[in-house]
Length: 126
Image (cartoon, rainbow, N blue to C red; front, side, top):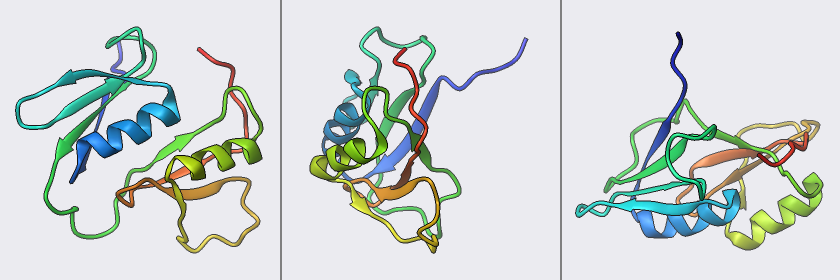
């Protein structure tokens, strides 16, 4: 028996803002709200499915230094260019981490500056 990733935890100043962004990006919904402002978002069918949920936990300041973990996303129903346009309209911004411009992915940041990549490969919807 092995483990699988069930949740990703992302510290943020405003969980509501990031929940709206990531729910639109991933077609997730808010699954739970805690009294301290923490939100859990995930697939419409809820916790325990093939995709991990994301817990947006209140943090006043980002952790010092560069994050060693980021999220990669793939479009499931459109090509990379169309998905890039959609993500930018949702509030993502291009992020420069030293890429050459030859990469087959786009580096973006969410509304709080968390970097993520839009990959070129298209995945089938779950």
